[in-house]
Each structure stands twice: as C-alpha cells, then as structure tokens.
Length: 69
Image (cartoon, rainbow, N blue to C red):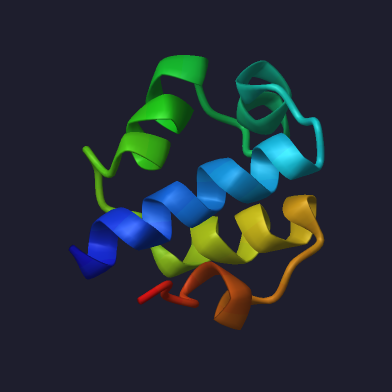
C-alpha cells in the first residue's frame, strides 16, 4: 500500500496547486494518458520524471513519500 499512497500524494499535490492533468502532462513532456497512468500507479515513475514532477509541483521529494498512517 505504500506505493499507492505515493501516487495518491502526487494527485493530491496536483489538485492543491490547481494544476490540470493536461498541464502536468505538457510540463512533463508526455501524453495526458501516460501522466494519468503515473497518478494511478500503473507505470513505474523513474527518478528523472520524479525530479521534474516535484519541481513542477513545488514540493520536496520527501513530501511525496510522506505516508499517512
């Protein structure tokens, strides 16, 4: 379940910043479908993409990996 929380955190941070999935996909230079697969945890998130993602969202990696117990 740890991985699921990470992907949920990505979606929650995107929603907090009021970024659309379209906007995120454009910024990450990928299709919307591919970006949404990342948020769902359907595809592996490479470190290079994670670096870009946190920069766009304006958060630290540690915030993405923060777990709610």
